[in-house]
Length: 333
Image 1 (cartoon, rainbow, N blue to C red):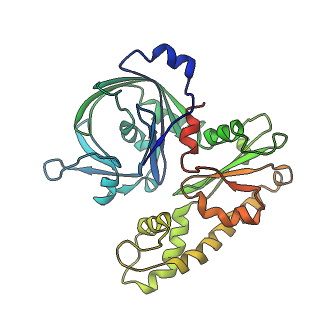
Image 2: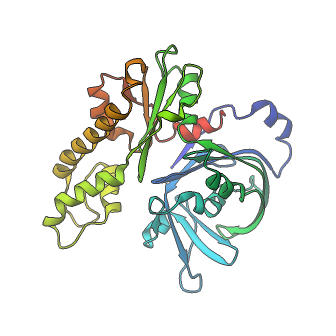
């Protein structure tokens, strides 16, 4: 999936440097639980499934395409994206994604057209908590020069500065700049519905992240688990949760190619899942709810929260283009 990135990214700095063929002033990368996103050298948002698979190149071909990237790095060959998923790779939400970041980010370290080397001045990477010293250390290890092969093309990439960006910060920035929050006299928030977990964050009137209000909530993996518990009795074996999440994302509620439709179980499980999220918000956000402005719901799973938007009369509302709002906003930071 590609989307044109139209935001002005570091415009004054960029205008000074655009004539340097090997330079990319800013690269934005979000290694999410369901999708991996980055902005490529021609300003397109790239979105691929969040899967990784190590392979033996002597036994198996690994060719990159629009939805996959193959990498040879430090004696290991692996694929990221749709091909990794097709080959039975591991979903990122089942791993610690910050530990995988050094591999995953190679998908985004693409030279400008016509070059085989790139120097990245600022590599912005989305991180659940930019104050987690262990995670920041793992990301900072990406700084330096990397010699690897990307989609069969030898590549040398030098990263000068890695900048961790708190998840939800970019979406909040877009929300404020585009007038998506109706009130600037109240704290506003962002609910990022992810695969492994979801995160709800609150920002003060001045735009400061109120970390004491952070809530970690069930992600779509939990929704899939609830659906699986309801349909297992109809199947010969326990269903693959990734296939359930694929069926939800596609909107056809089919379990892979089995022909089994789980739409009825989805409706019941979603109502239960949404109610648990709302219950946790009511219980743990009691001190902030009376003065809360609005909460933007983002992420590829944001449309699943339509019942929450209706129940809150728009106080919790699904953001426009919810899947891409974060990666777009990273270019504005």
